[in-house]
Image 1: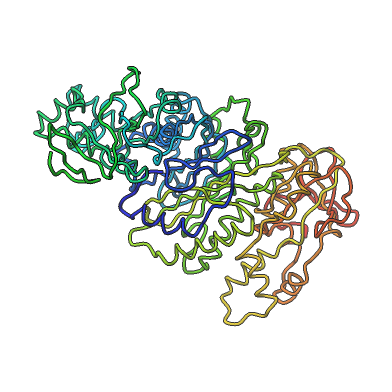
Image 2: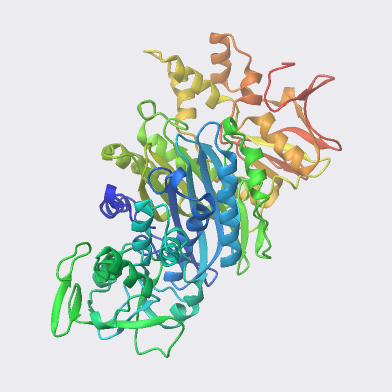
Length: 317
Length: 317
């Protein structure tokens, strides 16, 4: 359930979902989180969906169809993992123009197949339809032992992220440069954008330890903003704890950019940001970057100074 | 999971689903039926989806937005009921052009709300996106005690349908005439097309008694053709048992049409066709129209003559 800012998703969903009140004791979570959650005979199922529309989310000539298929699955799996779950079953709606490019569609399905194998899940159904542009809409059912919400961070907890941030954005900018030759580390950044991987390997960590979690699709500042707002806590990011990936550092040196712009506002990394009650023993590539406290908003602590971070914007960096 | 014949859904789905083998003991039914079916802690969940694309499935200026919302829910509920289930939870993907007609979208949601209340189900999530045309894609989770398939009819069983058939098609034709004034019975036929109701009231009958079932979206001959093919039985429809609704009779007399064309090939009635082991006591508006036997194909028995019915076509009537 990613955000398409251009049509004001939050406002529209808010208005529309107010038409549809939920009055069902089996619905644990409805609108507003990474996934919905329902109780089926004591098992918590996660329900989510995400659509890829040609010329909105992808441009046919610019994306490898296998990568498109991979991304369709990965972006949905990322939502499920952010709620502490594993993916189980998907349905795919596809809509195609007249005389579609069947080879392209088959290649999208090859990417889907690769992702299904990687995430250990299955597509169990779907439907096809006509349209003027290609549309791939995935609905995904996951399951979890414990639903991890955006709204359940508490004060005085620690904030963690997985891996490094900002790489996907740097990769996108490199791709848009349309250079004839790229250096190897540039190609690695581009791949972070074209073939992101949902952090399925962290699912147990999230399910067991996270008090709240979100996947980083909009950018760290914006996504922590969702946790802050929904959990009613202030979040402080400690700048010196933000690690800069060597490739991002090279990119910023070469193109005269500020790496913190990318780390805080990059988006589409499909890494996870989450809060925990107490320090986690070193688990893989996660790292502590800050803390929660009483208050509201997301702040960057730089030495002794605190800067309020807007969801989008580059002040004070 | 309705069929969009114009792009050869069956062939395409067949080709694409062959890329995606299912190897999961919890998946009871995958591709090829009205819904998929999965086992969650002993409960059978039904998963299905259906998309409505502007200028493909609906023309904005020609359909009342409330009716569009109602139909989006009803067509999916119909698939769930055909598998013996009740609808529980839905997710809606909507995609809208720039500067969308918000009033229209809100009115679509009013129709959705009316349908949710009628079918006693809830929308628990969704996402919005941009696109060049309006798209409403519904994903529906239902549940059943027993999955009723298209593939489980046996030889020497009875074939039933609910209510009358052909009314939706007659209503569509009336609508397309664009007359300034319609007679009352004509308006009733038009309503059968614009606001069809899924037979949720027959869900228990199907769950308890049906050996196979399908909802009539393509037309009786075509849909029984699916049961025949997937169950490997011959189906015989007895012409004298096909009831002609008084409004359809009036329509056919006024416009010089053959009512059996409409009953056998009409489509979009959202009535149910199903097979049973033995005669059902009178339950509501269902009626027996034929039987199964060893063999293949769908036949119309007219007196002592038998005519093979193609999925689409008007021969021998």
